[in-house]
Every structure is written in C-alpha cells, then in structure tokens.
Length: 328
Image (cartoon, rainbow, N blue to C red):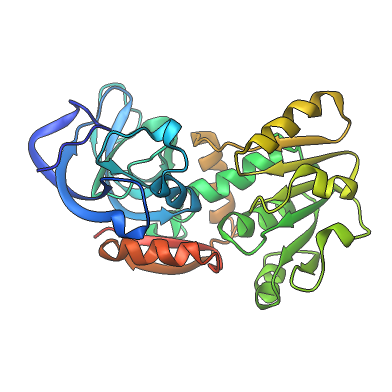
C-alpha cells in the first residue's frame, strides 16, 4: 500500500481509501488511481467523505510540475483542491459536525481532494448550498472564490464601475461575470462567438468576440480589467484602464510580480490574485446560490477513473464553465 507524504503520520493504521496520485510530474498519463492509507483529522480538522471534486487549471499546473518550488518532490502526491461531501469524523476543536454536507477548497498548494476521503481544516469549508446537488457545489470553491477575491477584495470593484473580464466563459469567468453584476458593475465580457449566448445569459452588458477584435484596439476605458487567463500583461492593457484603474491577473510570473511592485508608484495598479479558501467567502457564495443570484455552470462530469481524460479536456481550454469528477 502506498504511503502518503502529505499526511505523514496522520493516517489510520488499517483503514484505506482510493485516491488519484502522481509519482512524478508530467502529462495526464501520470495520474493513477490506487489504494492509500485513509487520513485521520487533526485539531481543527474534519474528515470529509468526498462525493465530488472540481477540476481546475491549477490541478493541471501542479500535475505538470510548474510549481515544484511549492509542491516539492516527495511522491506520491494527491492533487486537487475543490471538494464536496459529508463530514464523517470531527477532530479535536472542530466546529463542523458528523453528517454535515460541506463544500470548500483545500489550501495546500498541491491539494489532496482527488480521494475518497480528505482531512480538511474547518475554516476552509462551509455547509454546502441546499438548492443544488453536491456535484454542482463541487464546481464552486476555487473558481468562485478566485473571482470574488479578484473583484471585490483586490480590485475593490464598486457599483457603477466598468469591468472588463477576459476569459468570461471559463470556470472562473462565469462566476466573475455574475459576481461583478451582484456588486453592481457594468460588465464587458470577452469570449468567443460560440459562448456569447451563455455569457449574455449570465448578465454581461456587452460582449467582445476575441476572434474578431483585439482588446488593445478597444476605445472604452475600464475601472477594472480581470485577465482570468493571464493572456496579457499590465502594459498590454494599461491604456484601457481609467485614471486609477486596476488590472488583476491570476497567473504568477516574474512579469506580474514586477508590475505589482511598480503599482506602488503608479496611479494605475496591477494585482495578482492568489486564492485562499475562507469560510466567510464560501458562506457568501452559498447565500448567492441559494437566493438564485449565482448560477453554477458545469460543462461535464467524469468518473474519477477517467481523471486523465478530464485533465486532457481541461487542457483544451474549451470548457464552458466547470469540470467535475464523481468520486463514488
């Protein structure tokens, strides 16, 4: 049976679980389903019986080894961040209870959600929305919290402001369009022609088809530019920002770190959103979902045995909304 460096000694002496692990960094073929020790929750944690997990670009990046400085080289690694399931055991000091249906995101850089069970810090979880199935709830945490932190917290988007969202039909983008509208902003969404109807349904006020129009050629000025895919840099789009506008990127790079540092002496700012799961954010998102103000768009679901195929689909960058794995 495979040992798990991520959990160390905090595993059950005899109970096991199925999990998707990688033994090296590489393509989708390095993902394998195997049997590993079941974790036990430590102080402030609960053990979640995982029902569904969301698949995110971050999972692909981790699998490829692009963030080895954070994920290290101790294998095997369980990847994955988004989780939805049932609490089956509570550790000392936990404030969630056995039987609670929860959703959330594991903040550890590699994650460990692609498994039948996960020991998760309580503050990274919240009770799941009641108006949608757990399969839908699993699609929410990383992507929606990224959008919320980027727009509300980093860019400080206010009612009446104009925001440009590049990548509006993807996993983060579909939440960003709706969250911007909830915050009272005017939304210009960038997507391809095939996704215009979807993005319009989600509330976008105007659409830019990137196959026909270069963003740099736009005449409008925006208070916030949210570059979900990180296809551009601050200098590419700076002229589209209002006098004190903010550009937000999701992809760590030397260039964006330099742009962020320079923002301290510029009126126009660059920000990098590094998402962290927090209960207060998950509760806010749950309220929006249950009130019918936030729609969760799931493109397709795969059984966990087809995890490599799910990653291949993610790498096409053609998903409309989110991709989910069924663990059962």
